[in-house]
Amino acid sequence: MRALFVIAFLALSSDGRAQLSEVDTLRWQYRVSAAGNWMRGNVEQFMLLGAGELAHVKEHWGFKSAISYQYGTFFYRQTLGEGIWRNFVYANPRARLYPYVMLWYQQSYQRGIDHRTQLGPGITYVLLRKNAQLLKLSATGTYESNRFRTPFFREKPELTSAELEIWRITGRLYGEHKLLEGAMRLQYEAWVQPSVTDADNLRAHVEAALSIPLKRGLALRQAVNWSYESVVQQRNTYEDLLWTFGVSYERK
Image (cartoon, rainbow, N blue to C red; front, side, top):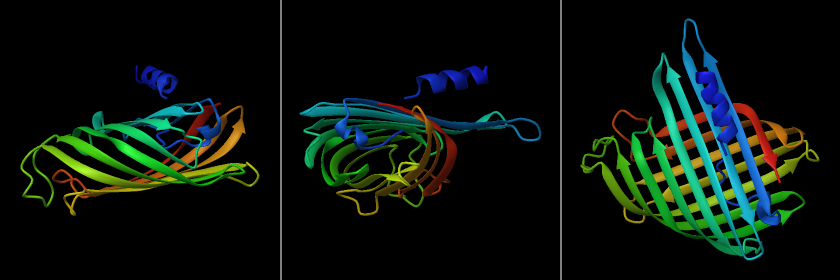
């Protein structure tokens, strides 16, 4: 039964990049990636990590939708469960400077987040777009709504409600580079999200992925994700680090 779940997820899963990538010059693009393990015996452990994106760009507008999901159990008890769905609508995305609107939805079992929604406008400046090299800077202003599992936060006695609303500014750097004449591809993204009204409420995230193309869109892929949140549930840590190995498939 669990094997059927894995197959279904890989078939339907559609990597969570926050900005347009090579799709700047393409009409349609989609990409899926997956990694996982299943162990039984002295230790029973199951983990599945999947991600995907779909993007469409025309001369004066474009959109991108990206979703990622993590699920894991240890001795049949769920220990991991997080989904992030990011959506963007762009105006004049092939220009060096272009605006967009972002909608971001997140749930996280291990972080105690029942739901988190961010919505707001942003602007991207393309620093480099040449010879399969891409480098961008972005800034986004968002209104954020959170509902946590409990109203108890680590080292935050002043927070007494499970529902938190806040305004944020996000600074983001995105890069994509082909290395060794296309034998490898490096993608990375880093962003920081300070609160406009609370200096002690800060989030940051860094992710990087290295892909080795095989053939017809199939590639071996390993990725590192690091994230930090200053407002977390009691007994949770401020940082998370994830290193994965797997495969990805891309179609243009």
